[in-house]
Image 1 (spheres, rainbow, N blue to C red):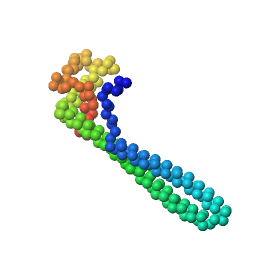
Image 2 (image 1 turned 90 degrees about the vertical axis):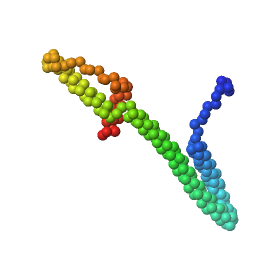
Image 3 (image 1 turned 180 degrees about the horizontal axis):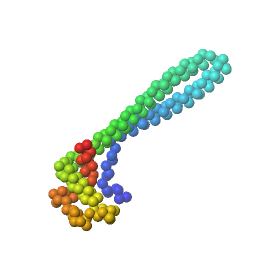
Image 4 (image 1 turned 60 degrees about the vertical axis):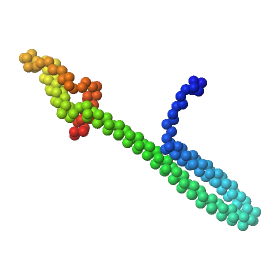
Length: 183
């Protein structure tokens, strides 16, 4: 009841969706037509047998000619159904292609914004700092207690990243994107 006074929801039914629906409805109608013709053909075939038994050859021949004509109609109907199904598949595939293209556009815009935020030089500097930190960690690793070089005064506390580098949770992702775009 609350929906009576509420805003109407917009449907996401596109023109392509309507076209696909119409094609599928037409296909279903053609299949029903095929079934009806097949039933009629079966009845007429039995009737033609009965007419031959009763000695009415001319009427039986007329029914056989009608059967041949209806067989041709069934072949045409089968071709039309095949065409409709191909059209439905083509439309659905075009919709999928459209969604992929939209996704690529969004991804491209995102990459452009990421490149605006950080230059390649800045990313390379951060990667160098990260490599230095990894090397420092390997030198001062507690897994080598007998050769701890930190006791000799060679190790010092790492300096925090400079404030000019933006702190983002997606820095690792950004670094991967830059590596991919450079490689």
